[in-house]
Length: 119
Image 1 (cartoon, rainbow, N blue to C red):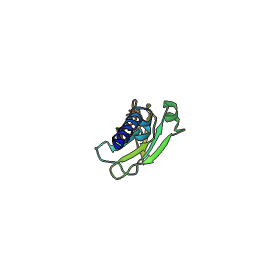
Image 2: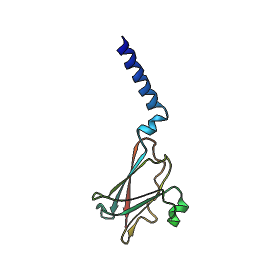
Image 3: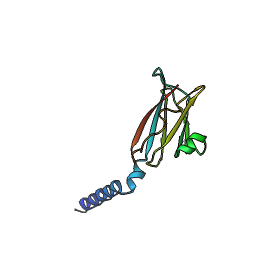
């Protein structure tokens, strides 16, 4: 009988964590970006910067996160706020200037995915 009470309490605590603010701590908000070129090929070692405002994006200042793509053109960022981000992706003379720079609001506690084309 005691074991059933303990199990019930543990289940209740777990449910409270999942449905409360603890949910976002258990499942951080992530953004997975895949960078491809105009031919549809993955771009390895592209530099990717995330900005929280269009002004910061345009001036290339105050990036909140930066990273490099892997062999499949992917870079992952985690621990983000559920807001709109502006993405700057570059490799050599290729970039995404003027096309596909804004994510739209990303979902809290989920893995959000975006493809970026650099030309």
